[in-house]
Amino acid sequence: MEAQQRHPFLKGLSKYRGAAPTVIVIFGASGDLTKRKLIPAIYNLGLDNLLPNDFYLIGFGRSPITDTDFRQQSMQCIEQFSRRKLNPELWEKIGNNTLYHSGGYDELSAFTSLKERIEAIEKNLEREVQILFYISTPPNVFKPILENLGNSGLSHRHSGTPLASKVIIEKPFGHDLDTARKLNHTITAQFEEKQVYRIDHYLGKETVQDLLVQRFANSIFEPLWNRQFVDCVQITVAESLGVGSRGGYYDQSGALRDMIQNHAMQLLALTAMEPPVSLSPEAIRNEKVKVLQAIQPLSLNADRSDAVRAQYDTGLIEGQKVNGYLEENNIPKESFTETYAALRFQINNWRWEGVPFYMRSGKRMARRVSEIAIQFKRPPGILFTQGNFFDIAPNTLVIRIQPDEGITLRMNSKIPGLETRTQPVKMDFRYATTFGSNTPEAYERLILDAMIGDGTLFIRGDETEASWKLISPVLDNWRERGRSGLDSYVSGSWGPLSADRLLWENKHEWRRSGP
Ligand code: BG6
Image 1 (cartoon, protein in one colour):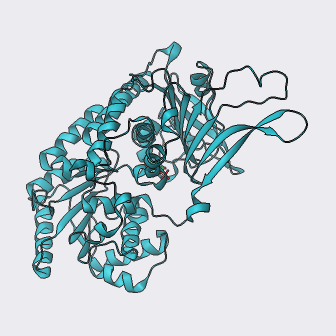
Image 2 (tube, rainbow, N blue to C red; image 1 turned 90 degrees about the vertical axis):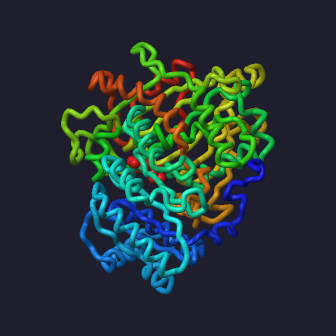
Image 3 (cartoon, helix red, strand yellow; image 1 turned 135 degrees about the vertical axis):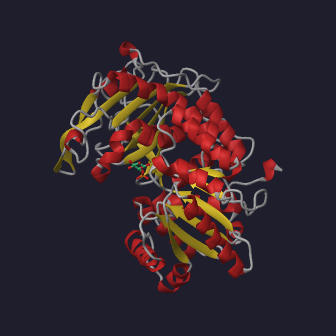
């Protein structure tokens, strides 16, 4: 029964430990994500004894390298990027089952031979295995990979049984609404929706998972979580890094596609959604889709636009001078790709009518910080309002996704002394203090969940389309306008002035995010 299905973190780990014999095939085996995140995540699952006893990793890529080379490279990735040290005994076990399959993504024969290789593994084990495909390539080869998975029969193996193949798809999921829809069609031509795991690594972050617990396992928040008490919500996903060596990719993407359409919209959906009827994947995803569909299309009128964009200029990050966006490698001098975007959303539903949801994300901002701030309405301005002594700030609940993960409630307090003076103070919960700091990486949780077929922390096809539906018109508008209306901001600042206007129009201001 659906209501009895539990979210992974309520299940305990025993379920994972019984996972079926599994082969993970990574497309894009020599890519950056594979090296930095995927291989270390798989290794850490091994350290926690969470990989199935019969487990194989196959890297699939175009480079003509051998199994031994790939094993060696994988070991180096673990040494360099794993959160925990390499344990030679464990590595020997995983390494022995780490293989490489060389081939083109558009060559059917490479997929047929992959299938034969996996069948040989099954024969050797005298057991059937499930395959988890992880597509971590540039998006231009998503289509041939998916089609060849279908044409080779790999996508239909053990169909209708718990050993049915599964596929994880990395971002970017489409370039706009139209391409996202096409990609959904390509996927569903080869896989059933329940075999598909569209990844958004933000959903694997501990603090993002905790959002559901904070909201629905505490009774004090829910009565306040609505238009009667909330004045506005501010979602910030800021980075101090620039585009670095990813200029080629980033210039085709920009802040809206890279961070907002996926990560920040997921944060919004989890913050604003209604309580799900159960913790089953479908119940949670239904609520997320519903709230995304309730968001009003953004106004793009020049005189009251809900969207602001800007590019970073030169400036200082941690005291060091850094280049402006147009001076970065692989960025065309005439580029109008936004490195910062701020949006103002209205949710047209019973709970949120009239409460603005502000969102901002940018590169080269003052600090790396991702947070959700629920700003409550001010108390009636009767008692503590006169004179200069009174400093009544709105109560704010801040959920810090990263870094320094935690939750802070800001409230007003009397400063001890004979005068009646007030000051905002904070009640602070820090994950590191309470739970220690060595928490699993997002990719560990997500790979594990996909392996056991739990889609709770993945994005459903209709969800991604609902989000694109809001974002695509903004992208079209910005493309048509080129550099006109594109603002700039100093690297190391909190973004352009035009983003302040978005809030001033409603008598709000951005929170000064900080410790
Ligand atoms: C990725 C973006 O999805 O998320 C990157 O492509 C960004 O541009 C990264 O830097 C941020 O992830 P995190 O986990 O460091 O916040």
